[in-house]
Structures are given as structure tokens and as C-alpha cells.
Image (cartoon, rainbow, N blue to C red; front, side):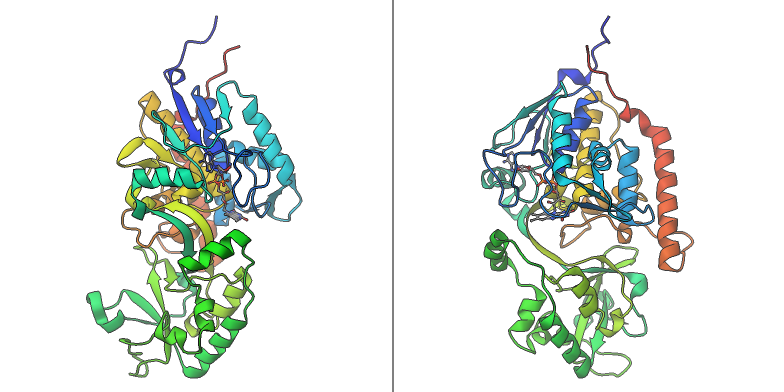
Amino acid sequence: MSEPKSKTSAHTVTVIGGGLAGCEAAWQLAIRGVTTRLVEMRPSRMTPAHHTGDLAELVCSNSFKSEDVETAAGLLKSEIGCLGSIVLQVAHETSVAAGGALAVDRKRFSQTLSARLDVHPRIELVREEATTVPPGHVIIATGPLTSDAFAHALSGLVGEERLAFFDAAAPIVDAEGVDREAVFAQSRYDKGGGADYLNAPMTRPEYDAFYDALVGARRTTLREFERRELFQACQPIEEVARTGRDALRYGALKPVGLTDPRTGERPWAVAQLRAENAAGTAYNLVGFQTNLAFGEQERVFRLIPGLRNATFLRHGVMHRNTFVDAPRLLDRTLALRAEPRIRLAGQITGTEGYAEAAATGLLAALNTVADLRGSSPVLLPPTTALGALVAYATDPDTSAYQPMHANFGLIAPLEPPVRGKRARYAAYSRRARADLEAWLIAHGDILAEEPVDE
Ligand SMILES: Cc1cc2nc3c(=O)[nH]c(=O)nc-3n(C[C@H](O)[C@H](O)[C@H](O)COP(=O)(O)OP(=O)(O)OC[C@H]3O[C@@H](n4cnc5c(N)ncnc54)[C@H](O)[C@@H]3O)c2cc1C
């Protein structure tokens, strides 16, 4: 006798985009009894960065970053491993030696994952470009290089002003590495109550040294399509600097309206740091959107006196990148607040990175299953790497939203505080793993799979 039909099997969910997020989402739906249409436009319509028709093609690096659970990247992977990520499983099956990182043989990775999805009886792979959002439950996972026609449909859905085509993210540093002796708290002209910013002042010789390093630093190589389009959108700090030695003193590093309490004078130049979260555990370098190579960012920006010992939680990036203003649009289940049958996953939500794409695909699928089953939403503890990332990305208080990967700066501070970066990260990791374990005991039934009828 066959198994009784589940409540979910009566539904078809459409997943648009067969990248990392879409593949993860389709798999998670299918193994829970949901018939899934996975719509992927390649190979008939390619993106400017993909080269094959394989699902989940990795467009750049073959690394999913560190496996050390005491890093945010490693913790995120351990969490999605506990939640049964197929992307992570296949990444392990196709891994190549890479020290402490999880790197894959990219061809075997995407071909193995494609094959796994291809043979699943509940997944129908449709090779066509989606140009509209279909009716019913939908997960949109069209990624940073969403096709123009679909971007048009999406902007009709969310509002043109809520969809971006480029990111221009400034670096974020850990608050603990900011030298409090070398910075002062003050808002320009003391607006808004006074002390919303930390200011890292520079003397003229310090500015000159910083300037020379900045204009001489190595930049990342952009792809042709990015070079063409990106610089029409926004200028990186090093490009502004190239226009003249004082350009930054009239722009991102302008000192007007600021007085250094140690000298009683206006500094020669000032780098402003804005708190990234209410707890003040991370700071954004205001106006430091950059295309410098990551190592160069650390070398050059540490020349600013208050940042000599800074730890970079996120490096600045400037990419061609389609993403929505998630804090204004999405709830914590990744559903559009205005139309909750539609969820978003992957880079289109503004979360960035291979593991992050798989993670949000997984979460969007579990929440769609929860909707279909009429069970409660799947909200991970905000102390976990994934819970904190989604809480940040969907918090209406998150302003000037730019793509974000998992990092410890997003996680609520420890009580009592733990001094020292290494000890603190280890404590974050321990707390996250314990909280996820407790969550799984209380809510783990959502992970139950439905066998395929023979
Ligand atoms: C040039 C570039 C380099 C990057 N390098 C890295 C890196 O080294 N490491 C890293 O972690 N992250 C990198 N990223 C970010 C990376 O894209 C994401 O981490 C990850 O691929 C996002 O997964 P995703 O599933 O959201 O999107 P993708 O993996 O891009 O998948 C989206 C899928 O949707 C399909 N699609 C698009 N529009 C349509 C449509 N209308 N109809 C049907 N299908 C459609 C696409 O063909 C694609 O297969 C890079 C991004 C870019 C643009």
C-alpha cells in the first residue's frame, strides 16, 4: 500500500533560477513532498558570467570559504549542514584539498548537483527564461545577474526604487579593533543629538601617506560587462582620489563640522565610522566603497590612525549585482510582506556568497513548506550565523542596505562580554551551535522528509 498523500503533495511551487539558492530550494521542497518546477534560462539564454548550462555553476572562486566553525563562514556551513543542505553535501562530495577551506572541483560540483536534481521525480526542470512571476507559491532566486526581462517584472512587483543593479559596499570593521584613543564620537555640526559617528582624524602627513597608498594600491580586475556598466553607477573611493589630492577632503573624508576634542581644532581629514547595529559591535567606513583587492584594503585603510588594528568583517566591493531592498520588502521568512506567496532567496535578497545563497534557498523552501502544511514559520535563533544574517537583511531598521555575507558583527553581543577576538568568536560559535541544537529539538519536525512513492 502506498503512503497516505501529504498535504504538500497537492501543491506545485515554482522556483525561478537554478543557481545555488534555487537548486537548494527546489531540493528542499521536493524531499518534503512538494512538486517543484525549477525554471532555469541557461543554456538558451546565458548571463554575462556563466559559461555552461549546468545548474549551480560557480561563476568565480571555487571556494565556499573556511570550514572552521569558529569563523562566521564555517559556522554558517555547520548550520546548513545540520539543516540538511544538498549544496553543502555535494560540495563535500566534490571537494578538493584547500587547507581549512571547503573548495570544490567546480565542474564535478555543478554536474553532480544537476544530476541529483534531474532525477528527482518531484522536480520538473524547465529550461526557459522567466519573464513574469507566475501564480501560486514562488521562490525567486535569479541571482546577481537576473535577466533584464525578469528584472523588469520584479521591479514592477517591488517598485523600481527597491531594486538595485550594482552594489557599492564599504568595508565594515569589528568595533573591538577600533582604537578609541585615536577616534572621537561626534556628528557633523553636532546634528541629531551629537554622537552618531566615530571620527578617525588624520593630520596632513597622515592623510598624505594614506592618499599615496590609496592611489597606488592594487585593484580587483573587473569583468568587461562590469567595467562597462559599473562606473556609470558609482565611483569607488580610489577613483575619486585619483581626480586630485584633495578630492577626498571635499568628499568622504571632509572634516567640516567636526572638532577633535584632543586638539580643539578641525582635523586635516576625517574618516567617519557609522555603527552597523544597535549594539555597536561593528562599524561601516562611510563613503569607502572600493574596488581595491581585499588585502590592499586592509593595508591601506589601516594607515588611518584609528584603524591600525582593525579587523575587517566585510571588505568593500563593487559589483554588477541585482538585489532588492530586503529590509523594506521581506519578512524573516524571506516572503514579500506585500505578497507572502512569493519568497526571494540567494543574492537577489542582498545576502552574498555561495553558502549564504544555499542557506537562504533552504530557509525560503522550509518556510514555503511550513505555509503549505499550515505550521509555524521557520525562524532560526538570531544568535546563529544564518538567523543573524536574515534578521539583519529583513530588519526595517537596517538602512543603506548593501549586500552582506555572514559575519560575527551581525550577531547580538555576548552577555557577559568576552574580551579578545579569538575567544569572542569561539564563544559566539558555541552559543550559536547550542541554540541551534535546542531549536532543532523544539522545531525539527519541519525537516521531516516524505518518501517518494514507488
Ligand atoms: C561576477 C561575479 C563573481 C562572483 N564571485 C563570487 C565568489 O567568488 N564567491 C562567492 O561566494 N560569491 C561570488 N559571487 C556572488 C555569487 O553570485 C553568489 O554567491 C551566488 O552565486 C549567488 O547564488 P544565487 O543562486 O543567488 O545566484 P546564481 O548562482 O547566479 O543563480 C541564479 C540563476 O538564475 C538564472 N536566471 C537569471 N535570470 C533568470 C530568468 N529570468 N529565468 C530563469 N533563470 C534565470 C541564472 O542563469 C542562474 O543560473 C559573484 C557574483 C558575480 C556576479
